[in-house]
Structure formats: structure tokens, C-alpha cells
Length: 396
Image (cartoon, rainbow, N blue to C red; front, side):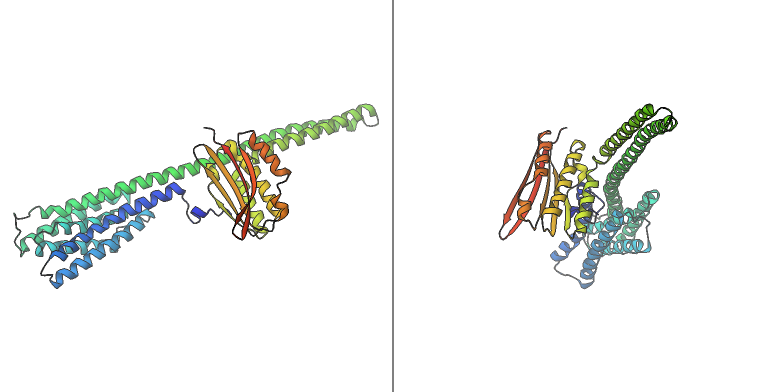
């Protein structure tokens, strides 16, 4: 089985992995808005013990739980809201209400229920997201309405009646922001799945085409061979010269059938570079050679698939016959103008260090497409490796 170093345990390609990381970080980093009340606490000269405990506890709770909710949401585990989601949201709303009572300016505390609500909505099935966000907004606003009459501090600059709806606004804002990010991520995942499905369908169509071509060729030739054979049987003993002529035609028909069959099989198998890589890894592994494949064969343009497959076959044979290798690395790289392939192995011997006729033949094939092949020994301190590399231009 291919072991791609850059993505050994992930089902996603490089672009999807990067997008996944970006989405995760963009959602998780928002949780650090919960640390803003800590800045207010640092500026507070009194630093009352209950306020210190609530500030630190609510901030850590919001950060930890939102991170967990984001992880669950990106893994598509959206079966909530659960009891855990509800308890976390109630605790952050309670912290917000407490700050409204004891803090002159509790605005920053309104982030806490908003951040938690965003994480809860991420784990809510699509049909229940809007009602869930609305209920949480109402709860946050209700906490503000209950807390405002209990305030025991002077507002300083006008009584903040807008506190009653501030948390509700943050709840709806963060819910919308988080859902937008998740919606975009879901769309990209669906596109990637569609691409994989399209590839599978293309493979299935190619197999059907191959089966149909093979059936047509074999059916035609076998029918002709059968008729010629029956005719030859009837002619034996009656017209031996005619029987010999029919037998000669029989031989020619069989030879033509074999040639046509080989042509169909070659056209079917020669275009799948991934199969050649898989065969190489399997063969080298059976010989005790640890093999790694770096890069994605799907990125190699179709016109170069067969050419690169030939290099893989030649390189694998070269390693098995002419080296004492214990490790091999296959590198595929495609940029805007050129596709590159390299096989690097250790355990080189004088026989492998001298390129043979197989590499010369590869060089001729690559040259027809404007490319080149090179085999060389690479000295790295006391270690030496052999590199068989090829490149060819990418034609758009």
C-alpha cells in the first residue's frame, strides 16, 4: 500500500488539509476573546476574590469548551445540542449576568455566551440551527434583563440598558460567523468527495471499455478461428492442400488475436501510474526494501502517466537486480511547466552505478516528449545513494 509521507493518515489532499487547519484555527482563535475580561481584572485595583474566580474560570471554560465543540463540529459529529452544550452555555450566561451586576462596564463579558453559542450551533443539525441560536439569544438577553436591576455599581456615563440585548447580539453574530465558516468547509468537502466519485466512475467506465474492447476482439477472432477449424477438419483426407492452407490461416488468425489482445491490455494498463507505484512498493517491500512515495500520482498529466510508469518499472528492476538496497524513496513533483520523478535508493553497487541499456531506452522515450532521464550516484558524507530521475514538460 502506498505510504505518502506528506499525508500518511489523512484522507484529504494537501489543499484540503491546509483548508482544514485554516478553518480550525480561525474558529478556535476567536475563543481567546474570552481573555478580554482578564485584562479588566488586571486593571481592577480591588480584585475581589469572587470576581477573580469567576473571571478566570469563565475564560478557561469558554476557551476549552469552544475548542472541543469546534473539533466535534469539523468531524461532522453534529448530533447536539447535548447536556454538555447546554450546561456550558448556561454557565457562561451566568458569568455574563454576574459581571453585569458587579462590573461598571461588562461589555467584554458578553463575548462568553456568544463564543459558546457559536460552538453549540456548530454541533447542531442543520434543521435545528436557527431555532437553537434564537433560543440561546433569548436566554442571554433574559439574563441581561434580570441582572440590570441588580447592579450595585454606578454605570458612569449613562445607564447601559443596551446590555439587555448586547449578549443576544453576540450570540447571533458568532453563530452566523461560525456557521459561515463551517458551510464553506462543508462545500469544499462535498466538492472533494464529488471529485473522488468522478474518478471512481472514470475508472469504472474505463474497465467497462476495456471489457467491451476485449470481448469484441476475442469474440471476433475466436469465431473466425472456430469456423476455420471446422473447415480444416472437413478438408482433412479430402483435400489436404486446402486443409494445410486453412491451417496456415488459422495460425495467422491466432497470431493476430494475440497481437490485438496485447495492444488492448497495454493501452489499458499503461496509463495508471498509481498502479505502477503500488506494484513497485509491493515488489520492493517483498524484497525487504522500505519504500516511501512522496507526491500524488494523480497530479501527473495523463500524457506522462505511461512514461513515468515505465521509469518506475525500470527503476524497480534496477534496484532489485543491481543493488543491496534497504530503503527507497520515490518523489513525484509537478509544477506549472514541468513534471519530475525521482527514485533514490541506498546500498548501491558498482553494477547499479553504471547505467545500462534500460536507462538509455528510457532516455530516448523521454526525449520524444522533450524530457530527459539521468542516473547518478549522490555522495553525502560517508553515505552514497543512487538516483534515477526523469522530467518532461507539462503540456496544457
